[in-house]
Image 1: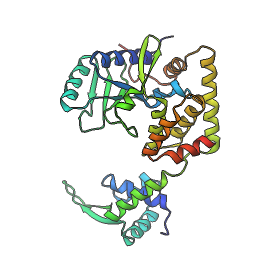
Image 2: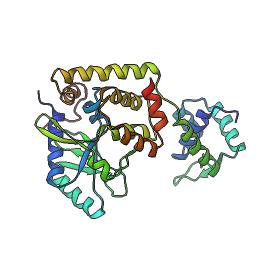
Image 3: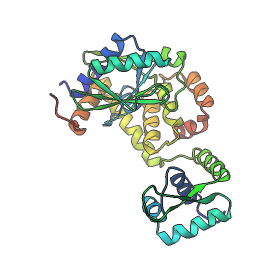
Length: 180
Length: 133
C-alpha cells in the first residue's frame, strides 16, 4: 500500500539528491528504522547547506519543485518547506537541534529503502544523542531513546554513542534510561 | 528560595518571551492573578525580575510587564541545566517503549518493514492538511 507520506518522502529525497544536497531524516520519521513505530506529523530533515549563496539557490529550486519555503533565512537554524501537493510541512534544519552536524555524522547516515525510495536516515547513535540533548527533552524523547536501545541491542556502536553522548553531556541520562 | 522552582522558572521564561500583562501571564501559566502578583513581588525582592512599562502606540494605559534581570537569566540557565539532569519519564513509560520496540523487531523478523508500516499508520492517523490535487 502506497501512502501520501511515501510519495512525499520519495519526491523530497529525489529533489535533494537531484540538487546534490546531502541530507538525512531526523526526528520521528527516523524512529521506525531503529525503534518503535508511532505516528507523527512532523517530518524533519537535516540538510548540509553551508553557505548563504547555496541556501538561496536551494530556495529557488525548492519552490520550482513544489516545496514552498517560509521562515527562510540562512541565519535561522530551520526553514519550513510546504509541499504544494499535500500541504504537508517539512522542517529543514541547517543546524539541527541536539546534533553535532559534522562530516562524521554525515558519514554515519544509513541508507534505508522504503518502498521505491532509498532514503538517508540519521544513524541510530546520533538519533539517540539528538533526542537526549534537546533543550526541551520530554517523556516521548526518552521513550524513543529507550525503544532504539532495545531494538538495536547488540547493533549499536557503543563507543561512538558514548563519545557523542559525553560531548553532548547526556551520558548519565543515557545510562539511566538504559538501566530501566 | 521559598518559591517552587518550577513555577518561578515558568514565570521567568514566559516573562522573557514577550510583553504580557498580569492577567495574560496568569492565564498563560494557569495560575491565579493574586498568586502571580505575590510571586512577581517575591521575584523582584530576590533580584530575579524587574518591572518595565511599555507605552502602547495607540491611546490607553501603558502595559506594565515583568522582565527577568541578568540574575534572573542566570537563574533560568542554571535551572534548565539542573532540570536536564533528571528523567522526564517514569519507569513504566520506558518499559512500554521497550515493549513497543520488541514489537517492531518482531515485525522486522517476520519480513515486514517497520518504516513502511509506520508510513501506512501515519497515512491513517495523520490527516492531510489539504487534499492532494
